[in-house]
Image 1: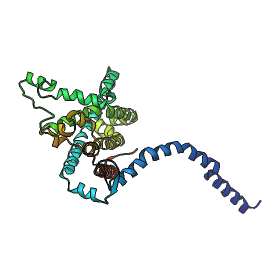
Image 2: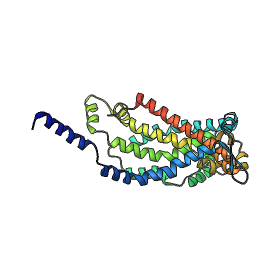
Image 3: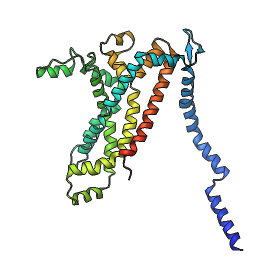
Image 4: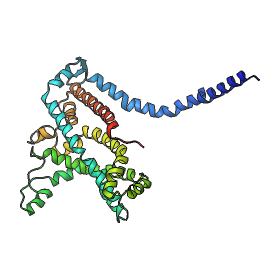
Length: 315
């Protein structure tokens, strides 16, 4: 056999190894088919259907007519939408404070020799496994201006607390506290896992260079945790932009909610979507609101991925 023929046989063998056979490809499609079908039926199709409905107007007895971009023109001119978007963005931005708090608590739980770590983890994680409605009802009682526990504790030191959820000056901050309290356990567990995956050799090398615990935290722990912090920030922003259950339970809906003096500071985009879709039965406009929210989430996620190149360090 000549050298040229040997080379051809070698290239053919490599090509055969690189290309899967039709049978292998077919089995691959069979295995991913259930997941792909579920994604198409339960995620992709509802999105496409909602996008179509956002260009329609619904009648009182069902049925819809094509109205073109009228719902989006109405959305842009609606001051209630702008206010709901600002409230949602404010809640999302303030809620990011929970990320550094989770890092600090995770660093404290990661200290060597600390006793009762399992108890602390359980205590932090309990709000995560508690139903959001139960969380909202609990904090609704705590924040009550007449008999709430928060104001009763403040009264012991001579402070007359406000009606936290009904006061426009405190309503958003009170809501953010509940959101951080609900999510800090989930973030803490992930950060704790990230810290325990950092190689010990890095801390040993930093110690040999004279770095104390605080310097090691800022120079070793935080940079190594930046991919984890990026993941948490993505999940937190997406979750915060879809805030609904806390506001719904703590303020109610419809006329009862609008009777709250602080409602204009608490109304979120998803709550506005709920009212338009299921209270006033304006489904076409509600579909336009939720599609706009989808685009906002996509834009902020892309922006986060672009900015992560400046502060996330991958080893």
